[in-house]
Amino acid sequence: MKTRITELFGIEHPIIQGGMHYVGFAELAAAVSNAGGLGTITGLTQKTPEALANEIAKCRDLTDKPFAVNLTFLPTVNAPDYPGYVKAIIQGGVKVVETAGRNPQQVMPYLKDAGIKVIHKCTSVRHSLKAQSIGCDAVSVDGFECGGHPGEDDIPNMILLPRAADELEIPFVSSGGMADARSLVASLAMGAEGMNMGTRFIATREAPVHQRVKDAIVAASELDTRLVMRPLRNTERVLNNAAVERLLEKEKSLGHDLKFEDIIEEVAGVYPKIMMDGEMDAGAWSCGMVAGLIEDIPTCKELIDRIMSEADALIRQRLEGMVGGVAVAAE
Ligand code: FMN
Image (cartoon, rainbow, N blue to C red; front, side, top):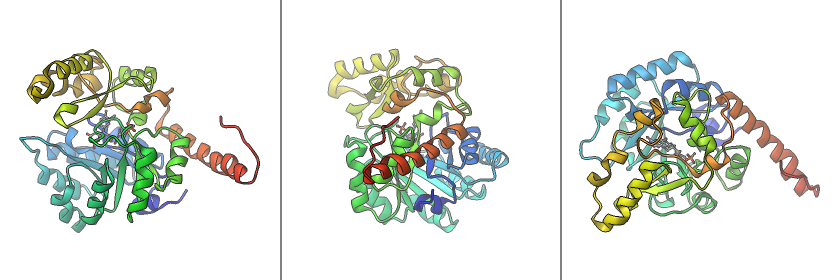
């Protein structure tokens, strides 16, 4: 399949693995890229620019295909060493950067001078247009269904994607709630040029996280995520667990008085405990509603091959059959 996204990034299939804290290590990024998609190393999971440089070098040893690095601009008081991370990305010869969080304007000149393609993750049409206006090459349009931070507008992808298609000139991929061939074909129908998946890629053999994390995603239904930190306007979609229930209880009882310090135990520094040690109730961790569509733990290649072959059948048989007047049952 050829789309503006496969052409832009030099990849075989229009499938991207989004940056994920304590999940997007070299092993996963390389597995996705080797399977013909675009894998992504999560920049800030690496504690220093030197550590990121090593992770990039490791990924390069594992694949000769293009891969990306995610740079998330957090609303923090003590900003990470962004210039150092950008330097590690440029010196590491990375050709694609996925930016997220605040607008990446400050780093754009450096990335563009180095010939790097930038895809910015946005949860609204207005942010997507801003990304286009500052020179981003593509956008990842992240609907309300998504795992992680859906923003505060609450627009699901059935509306957000066609709205983005109506307004944007640069290519975009769908993100949030994407799991299979149906997601890909629907995204293409709504104007996207590919799709980005987060939660689905955690439940793969190569994702370097504890088996209990993968099993929790397979066991979860679409009813099992919760939105936390809404009162702080830093909404995050997470898998429900004991820590999340405690956090939501605090949000309810403290109301408008809630401060970040009140919930620090449930949200700060919890990822290594969950992802590495499998302490599933250690805190709140991002997970999409799409968990309800995830029933197995394939390799990245099995997953991507399955999506592409089923997408082909969906288009050529079910959809083509319908316009040709032949009804074909969905699987
Ligand atoms: N997005 C970022 O830009 N930076 C992150 O550090 C980040 N961490 C994530 C951690 C987890 C465990 C998950 C599930 C998602 C994270 N995301 C992060 C969001 C994903 O890149 C992606 O946009 C999102 O998962 C898409 O929704 P989906 O889970 O429904 O596929």
